[in-house]
Every structure is written in structure tokens, then in C-alpha cells.
Amino acid sequence: MKIKTAEFVLSAPTLADCPDFGLPEIAMIGRSNVGKSSFINAILNRKKIAKTSNTPGKTRLINLYKINEEFVIADLPGYGYAKVSKVEQQKWQKNLQEYLLKRDTLRAVIQLIDIRHDVQKNDLQMREWLEHHEIPIVTVATKADTLSKNDVYKSKQKIARVLNTEVIEFSAKSKLNTEQSLQVIEEIIK
Image (cartoon, rainbow, N blue to C red; front, top):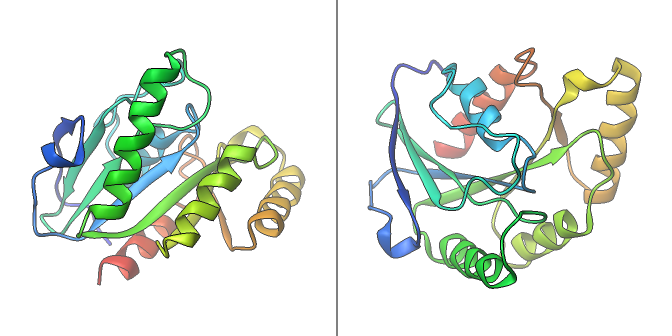
């Protein structure tokens, strides 16, 4: 798939604030600071379409991007550590669940996992929740450029075993598997 156009449309606090584009949608989900924005920038070949930050919990809204007038990417708030109150985290969780369960145009979720760490408890909980609700999931292991090839292989195998799924290792920095990620998206939206 060739990315011809990519535009940030809006940030929405709730599903009710998300416009209906009538296009298939792919949601990006993962722990805070896993690299969702970097993944989006890399696959779209745009440096700053999605704002990146070293501070966990920066994505607090549902950020929507329209791609090639063919599909929409939704960057969802990260789960896990973030310097916000429990009340705010619960609000995010409620909005996240509502979006995932009620967004009619949602085709799949890309769950991003940091390849440098073991699969976390909340990664597993999210995975089980998505599977329970029969939402298709693609697993991408981010930050592969930070490890040796041998460690990437070992970590990828471990993630695949724990989550019982195929895993795409990915690096926004080196652009490792950007094409493969786009191919997967293309298959989902057709």
C-alpha cells in the first residue's frame, strides 16, 4: 500500500465525539509510552503527524487520522502507567471500552508491545478482553532497534508464546517492517 494522503482529523474525548467517516477503522492500542505515535508516523512516512512524547500518558483522547480517503487510524489512550489520577484513568478506560465495543467501522486493533520487556499484566488483560469480545488483533513488538538481532528474536518468540499469536517486530527508527505492517492493514480493510 502506498500512502498518498494522511491527515490528522481531530482528537475526540468520547465515542460520541467521533465523526462517522464511513470508512474502515484500525485502532492502535498499547501501554503508555509503547510507541503508538511513532508507529503511526513511521507507517505513514510522516515525521510528526502523530505527536510523540517521552512522558507516558500524553495521548488522552481518541486521535483520528484519515488515510488515502480509504481508512481511518484511531490512536487510543495508552493503558498502564500514566501520571494521572485514578479517576482520570477510569474515565479513559470507560471511553476506551465504549469505543472498542460500539465503533461500527472498527475492523481490528493493533496491539503494540514493547519488545524490550516481558508482556505485562495489563497487556494480557487487554488481550483477553479483546479476544472475549471477538475483536481481531494484530500484535506488533515495538522498539526492535534497541536490542541485538538475537535478543529481538528471543523476545519476539517469548511474546508470541505468551500471547499465542504471530508477532511483527517493528522499529520506527530503522523503519523495520513498515511495509509488512501496511500490508497487514491493507488486508484488514479490504
